[in-house]
Amino acid sequence: MKGTLLLFAMLLVLPVTMIGCATSGDLERVQADQKMLGAKVEQAVQDAQAAKASADAAKAKADDATARADSAIKAAEERERIADEKAKKADATFQRSMRK
Amino acid sequence: MDVWAPEAGKPVILPLSFVLPDTPRRGIVVNVATMRLFQYKGDGTSMAVSTYPVGVGTKERPTPTGPARVYRKAARPTWHVPASIAEDHRKKGDPLPPEVPPGPENPLGEYALYLSKPGYLIHGTNKPASIGLKATNGCMRLYPENIKVLYNDTPVNTPVAIVNQPYLIGQRDGVLYLEAHTPLEDAGTLELAKIYEKLRAIEKKTGRTLDWTKIKKVQTEARGIPVPIFELRQGSEKGVPQTMEVRHPDTLHGRPEIPDLKPDAWYVLAADVRNELEARRIAAIINHQGPPIPARVLAKGNAYRVIAGPFTDGSGARDAAKRLKIDLEIDGILIDPARK
Image (cartoon, rainbow over the protein chains, first blue to last red):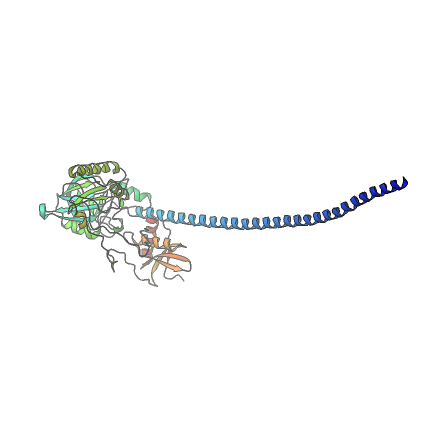
């Protein structure tokens, strides 16, 4: 009886210890995996942020160039308008000067 | 094209033919819409036509249309200043005497044909650049060289017809031409309707359809030159004269002469600008005043100065400065020869 109980306890203890050993190993692996994944995520986030910052900088540069080009076009149109006005004014003055 | 500073190499089209106005062909006919005078001499197959450009009345004081005749004529006429013109001059600080004797200050020039419409003349000018402009007080001005010929060739009592016809159709050698000009303010619609009626009558008579798209194009472009629009006699369009290219002449008749610079003369600084085109325009306008005021552009760095002169003395320079102020609203600065 005692022997049977001992055997049964041994039988019980053995699987329990076997379950406990499998879980810690896995846990370590999982923890290692999680740590690696975390590092990858962190890197990916950093990469994405860097890419966004670069894209934002490029857009800002392009917007600035567009604004400067628009400004130059407007300035040229204004100069042309002023030149046309001066020409018309000169013609009108000349017409008046041709009267008696 | 900028008429004062045309771009080098730009072609200019000069019309060599003109459609005659729709009037009886006798005496003198002036078409104010095309700013052109026609003189008919002889009749039938021996008729000869001469034509000259004219300056006509302003919008405020237009040249009146209708029949008239040459009432009298005068060489070296005295100008009796009308009250309205005297008042205009007084207002701008340039009072005129009641009469202006013959000479370079006389706006009638060297010859005048007085019309039976009181106050209206066909005369010469001391402002040749005004020909082709609406700048008179109703009279018709001709270039000095043209009025001389017309005057000598026109007896008193010659009939004169003044018309306003911006659209003209005529035919030569079996080809129908349309000549279109920009109408004066009030005549366009009515005159266009008259011409369209004539063209529809031609369609009916010939039994053939005109190219109305082409007609509309000629009318809206209003280039002032006769354009072939229809063959009255089929195959005749092959004989239409082509545009001929002429070389720019070495000398231009009537071009203002600009004397050489003289270190001991007086000058007037008329403008100091940063734009060369603007400077050339101002100098050209000053050169074409009547009587002419010589002017040129002197460049220094990126500044362009318009200098009027040379004048032999301060009085001449001051007179020029006064004229620049009154006629062109230019505040000139006198430059005397003693200035360093």
